[in-house]
Image 1 (cartoon, rainbow, N blue to C red):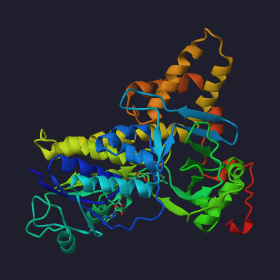
Image 2: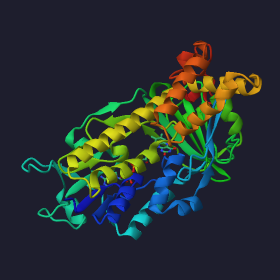
Image 3: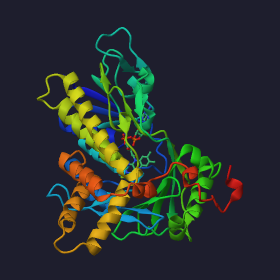
Image 4: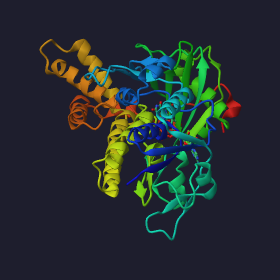
Length: 446
Ligand SMILES: Cc1cc2nc3c(=O)[nH]c(=O)nc-3n(C[C@H](O)[C@H](O)[C@H](O)COP(=O)(O)OP(=O)(O)OC[C@H]3O[C@@H](n4cnc5c(N)ncnc54)[C@H](O)[C@@H]3O)c2cc1C
């Protein structure tokens, strides 16, 4: 029986799980260091979060502080562009999502958890390895136990690591992780006067740059989040500091410098790196990993906050439901489920990085404009668009049918292997050997 749970980390994953466990009658304490920066990534949500926001009873409150998002677009300096408009997939999945002010969203989640009776402790928690207890591999350190109102003789029954990229338990226990294929660094900031070039309200625009890619997330009528994602080595060529690199990349890419010609930066520049990973172990005696602490796929397509909330919902159902008789089996089922999610997002995101998606988009446009009224392509095109919408919205990212439609339509529609090469997201400027780097601030170039 799990009666008392301590969750470390009050991000979306920790707060969502705390709400769900408290509703089950499990006494839940959440620790957070409460050192949230003014700016956090995770500002654009996929529609698949909506049922979870509704379950938590916070969709209206999220809507009040957010910008509606109707879709996303991927565009390339060579003129190719694919627009994804979210479609309605039944009552649970509407054709929209939200761009959120992330710190405000986290505060809202916390307020909701407090309303439900979750106890929050403002404390940077630490854990220690346990060697002499067959039922426990980890415990909260003495001061963390006391801060949460526990005693060494009466600790919580289960510890949940929701510390995000800090990966508190994995670091303490030496748990390894599978790294993703990319070695990127992301720099981002908020700007005014940065045109998002959206064709739909709140549309997130992803641009393929001369190397790497960028995001533009409209947050309000006037403020846009702009981020660049570059291979770590390539990033060094753009400057020594995050601010220099962000500026230099904007200047170096016509797609961005047109939109940002009159930009004013209204925040610091934040940096994230080493984020693509999935832990080799998800649980052990007395502990379990949640959200980013378990793993993160990639910023492309914005699956992170959804995955954090989904991991809470899946853990709640498979580990804590009254019908669960064996917690270890439930935890294994939870891990398998989340591995499946990671693999599905990873597979989909690969279509963006290797250029197949943009190439498909070009073919799709061609079909819309030129295919005859009785052509098979014209007949098939709406099915492909629907499958794509199901995949990128998170609604059916794991669905075998949409996955198969994407796979086969790519194989049959992109006949020229050179097309993906043109559209792929390059890791370095060397791959674009004929182009010369021309940044406005040459002194910033290493
Ligand atoms: C470059 C980049 C861009 C991204 N863009 C998006 C996007 O557009 N949309 C999207 O959905 N996702 C995006 N993400 C991912 C998203 O930010 C994360 O997946 C999400 O925040 C994970 O939530 P979480 O609750 O697991 O962890 P976090 O949000 O990281 O929360 C962890 C919490 O734990 C606390 N904590 C850490 N250590 C301790 C400790 N020792 N004691 C107490 N508290 C502690 C922290 O203070 C924090 O509050 C992006 C990620 C990156 C790297």
